[in-house]
Length: 137
Image (cartoon, rainbow, N blue to C red; front, side, top):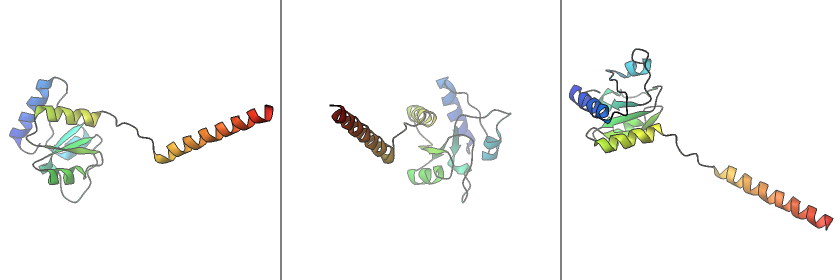
């Protein structure tokens, strides 16, 4: 967290929840290397700490804290595992919901090609069954 007061407030808020183990880092390099051998499940990163012009590769999903939607989306896109952004003044409920979304595996959607292949396969099986019933009958 770039600003010590905001970082302390966010840390206190997350500790009150008693759902998260919270550790603070002063740089992205510190997060990437792990804090004393501890690797986070999720990183909340102050947008001020995100350098311009490069993609950040952190070993965990990342949510960027920003002051406005344009900067938030732009900065979140700089992370390989970016999971979106939050306002720096987000409510406890918004923070909790964003963390839960980022940590919950996404719903797997079937691609159009898989759906078409399954339908074709079903039609072929029905056609073969119909043919075999006609030959016997």
